[in-house]
Image 1 (cartoon, rainbow, N blue to C red):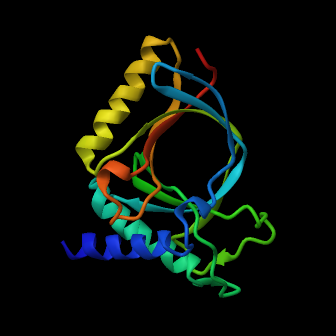
Image 2: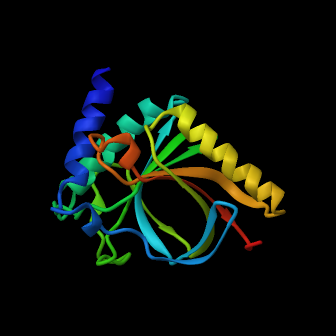
Image 3: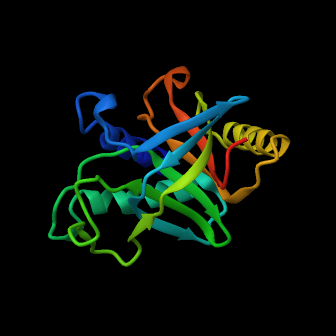
Length: 195
């Protein structure tokens, strides 16, 4: 329980840096089409600050640990000890080794100007331009809710004959105190075409 409380407090602070949630920067994308409740988005390339929580199967535990590492980075645990603006979403992706947690790097930075993480556990990665299939939903950040919507996304893609490329990623856009019915959550996966 203490880990969850710390995670919630840090996430609240993270998402409240600006006076309006809509002002928080997100990766740029264009909606190509929407079919059967799935939105197909063409994302521009962007950078993330990411950390792998190796050997951890529990998503909540991995999320808490990863969030703390990344929050330290954007709070100045970097060279040149510079705070970085808040962005959305917080991304969570399962891997063979555990869970990868990532924050979006603000677009003002390039590979040569982005602050270097002080911790070896945090890496700056470039996410290439890609086509993503996305299902948006509200509600609590539970494994059950995540699995339900990830399964829905995969079933709809299979029915449309669209193969996936890689694992399903989850994305959370709101602070923890946001009422569940008002939260913007998404599950997304890379695809190579639209229906």
